[in-house]
Amino acid sequence: MRDSAPARARLADVAARAGVSVGTASKALSGGGRMRPETRERVLGAADELGFSPNRHAQSLHTGRSWTVGLMTTDGIGRFGIPVLLGAEDALGAGKISVLLCDTRGDAIREQHHLRALIERRVDGIIVTGRRTDPRPPLTDVEGIPTVYTVSPSEDPRDTSVVSDDAGGATLAVEHLLGLGRSRIAHVTGPAHHAAARDRAARTLKLIEGTGLAPASGRVHYGDWSEAWGRRAAEAVLRTDPKVDAFFCGNDQIARGVADTLRERGARVPEDVAIVGYDNWDAMALASRPPLTTIDMNLGEIGRVAALHLLSAIDADETQPGVTTVPCRLIVRESA
Image 1 (cartoon, rainbow, N blue to C red):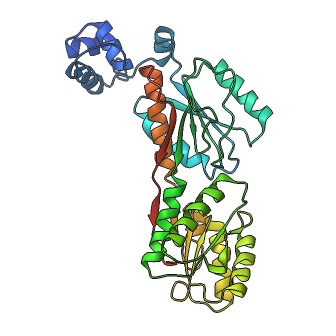
Image 2: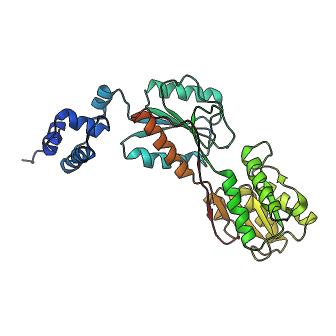
Image 3: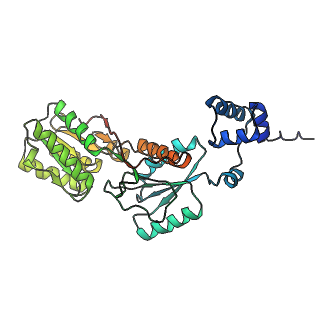
């Protein structure tokens, strides 16, 4: 005869072990109620010791919460959305909150469809992320649902947004190249109508000109976010300014194209010409020859900070309107 399975711990068992009432135990486990920190810790410790797992359905009925958060992204390939999602999950997981990923693919109709589905699921909050740093219109019909915007900030200053510090990232790149003794720095970037390209270019020019130097070839080279553009731009810079000794590129794809052209022209990287990219996209940065020194936008930290803002709005009804900026990081590899 098989042994019967051990009985599942009940909330009453946790309360008894912690020496508190069932009501107090329930509030401590759900993160609500006012109590001494040591009381809450005692309840959580008792739950761990007994292997107690809260019944989320019952909690939902009691608290009105679904213990789910929606993450809506316009980034179809996940280049920016997935790191933000992982960072958010790290922060939300401690509270046993699940994340529902919705990919709008940049389509307004699809976004409305996903938004209706999240509302019907009674999500506790929504994180919105994009693949561009340009401000975006806020979601509609989400009154009462805490919402945080990431990467692409909301156009409404009353909303909560968490973004990467593009100006700071450009500063890290240019100061690194200047620190290496480079004095003929070219800047090759994406479309001029993209905020990321404009913001990084403005800071780059300010820093270079602030040292009494001028950018290689005398201007910023705007184009698109592709390797092909990086190759064409590198050819143009080398024709107009053969003494160029560094490239700061608006993303890693452009930087990889620049590296290809320099290698084909017989220039040594980084001995003759140094290269710094942007994004720290492993698929590009590590596959480049040589591997790219680049700027990491810290997307995981953006997701984590956004989730913490969301939790404050959900649990304590404390919103933080305005834009929170997360610093970038310089990742040094072989190209500079």
